[in-house]
Image (cartoon, rainbow, N blue to C red; front, side):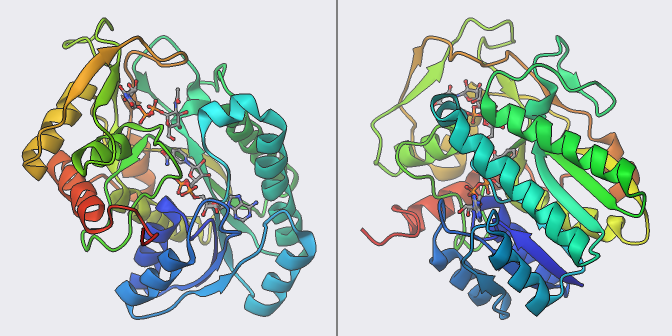
Length: 339
Ligand code: NAD
Ligand code: UD1
């Protein structure tokens, strides 16, 4: 299939491109490189032996997107392009809404113009808000999000449900990711955050490689077994395979389906630190600090819908996640840049 992958130069996109190409699909990446590097695109080609088609465009640019559709004739779209830093979205809500909503709307309009019916969207567990339970199932309603980032995901889900109701021939899958971590086992592609990382795993990796002195764990007084928060961490390669399963599932059906992608298991921050130390052989110095505003004590996915509909389940272990994060970080201490 010809698959347009927006945001394909980014962390999840680059791993998804590798899996799609590996399965024999023709991948067309559209990315404005606002949070990624052309080197990632080059390495996708190096890893797979097949360079993806690459367009450095803003997905909000209707004319540019039109040209890509005219030239490449995609049969399906996997939409990952978006801004994703929660704290930044609180400080710059309009930039987040403009970019994330506009990109989704423009894509849906151009898809309609070219009669493309299959759309896979990268949503997030954040759409559940704080429901008061730890097991998140897709039939729970979307909750109250604490950030414009989260609300942009909720709004796009709403666009998709409305579009799907208006055009019953659309086939939409909204993938709700839990916490993707890790990197490709080759160590050639991985997560390359700009500046000081916000998320746990890249922070731990940068402590391990000596770029940061220590980790601050946000709270040890949570109502959890060891007092630190629990999350459902999944390997980014499993997540990428979930996209492959979703786009293939979307062929020949219609409707709009929300599907969790997670392991179903909650892990604490301390478990992650210890697992990383064992996998890398490097001690991770840490201190406990105050709770981070907006954090929730504990949640994880109910992954049974993904198993039932996509025949997908996470296969890689916590050890794989830590080993592969470390491989990537130690071989590329400054990510894709060469400093
Ligand atoms: P990323 O920043 O590495 O990738 C996003 C890519 O989109 C980047 O390459 C960026 O340059 C590109 N982009 C942004 N706006 C664009 C635009 N207007 N036009 C073209 N390209 C644009 O982030 P990621 O972690 O790979 O996340 C991918 C998607 O998954 C995002 O939509 C994110 O919100 C969602 N998501 C991520 C996580 C996570 O933990 N990483 C969790 C849930 C959902
Ligand atoms: C965060 C976002 C979420 C987004 C997801 C993926 C918030 C509140 N939530 O999820 O909306 O979908 O990233 O981008 O920002 N931690 C530390 N020290 C650190 C960093 C993290 O103790 O330096 C802890 C956090 O308190 C949390 C866990 O590690 O308990 C995971 O944090 P993180 O990787 O930021 O992911 P989430 O907060 O789950």
